[in-house]
Structures are given as C-alpha cells and as structure tokens.
Image (tube, rainbow, N blue to C red; front, side, top):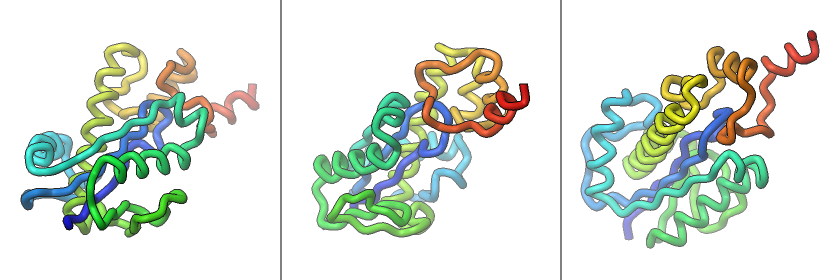
Length: 184
C-alpha cells in the first residue's frame, strides 16, 4: 500500500488556523519540495496538480481551538483525523513527535525529502495562506495578506494599536508586547 505523507502549516503564527494535510500520491509530480522553500507562485501551481493526482485529507483548527486545547492536542487530533480518512499501512509525519498518536512514523525534514510529505506541506501551506488572505479582507488593518499571521514587526504593531481579532491566538505570548506593557 502507498505511503501517506503528513505535514502542517501554521504551528507558530500569532493568528489564523493550524492546517494539517495528509497525501497519498497516485502518480509522481515534478517539482515537489518543502513548501517553505518554494515560491508562492510555485506552490499555487503545484496545488491543483496535487489535488488531481492524490488522495488527500485537510483538517484545520481555529485560534479558538488552539487556545482552548493547546497546539499539541490539535496536532494529535489532526493526525488521528488524517489516519481515519486515508487508507494506508504507512503514515509518515514531518518532525520528531507523534503527539501520542500510534501507528505512524516521524522524520525530521521529511517535507524536503519525501514527495508525499512535500505534497502535504504544500496543501497545508496554500490552504492556510489562502485563508489568511480572506481574513485580511475582514481585518484590513492587520496586513494578514503579507505576513500570514506570523509575528512580524508590522503585525505586532497592529496588535499594539488595534488589539486582538477573533482569529488571534490569545494564549500565545508576544514578548515584544509584554516588554512594552511592563515599561509603561
């Protein structure tokens, strides 16, 4: 049976969903790599090819889910969901932790080494980035279309000026904001 590659996007941002994807490739796809090393244009070009040439499952967890349950719980639940929805004897997750889920292997930098994990990386990143562009329309003062919710200087300044939105992870500590709060 084929390999199911699994990866996530959005573990560390201050806003937006955690997105996880599992992919079983039906045919090889040229140009797959870790989504972080591919340009946005290349990821967008590969996305439909992956959708057309694979069995896949994408799962998302909101900022509220992350705040309520924690990132590790979300990652574990995402792994279980992917394993439930995709039939494979071999599940490979990028990284070094199974988050308490049995029946899968891990490999550090699998997203750069294993095509199925690269494909999962791309599906997760493109899905998440597209959602952040939509969020930018709802919350135009934050610049989500540029930094995708990560802790850029501009994003932290927007939080300082306008506060949190419903898509912000309120349990994530922002040292730059804490420092200024104590200094005043």
